[in-house]
Length: 219
Image 1: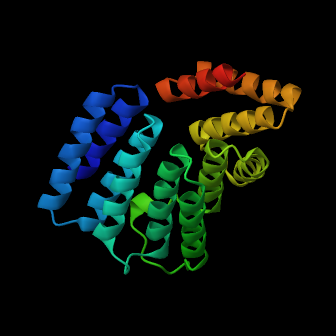
Image 2: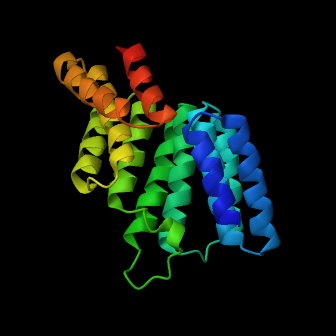
């Protein structure tokens, strides 16, 4: 039930029904607590942190990520730790906290490096791989206005991620477009932005459209 409720919240978040999404997330958190599943509760908190990042509430995002980290403790699989540190980094990025952001990214990177194929990773964390971490780096460096690093990591994420991750690849392409724009590479930025706009028009995702709008505002 917690998983279905979180999914309902994520779907609401994706169509920009943010109040409804938050109600679903709080309910999912209650269900995870009732089931005694602290790890899944941490994943719900991480999802809430991502929504806070999207809404520009950096301080709230950092706090939610830290509560999630406390929830799983130091014995959590490295992949889970990497995911939660990366989520915290995104909050620091929104707040332009360079040192805290890069420290959280470094912790995420170290944790992922210690992951082994035989680790008992919960199903909800299995998506978090090198491609996803590169995506988090790209977003963070874009927010910190370190555009050269943002472009490098976004390109790496696009190379590592398969076509099955259409929406994530779209978000990453917009991050790359924004980084190129920040570097003054206008033509490349516009080509990437136009590709992303075309893809967004084929998706039922308010977030996809908002990413493209954000790029247009920067342009």
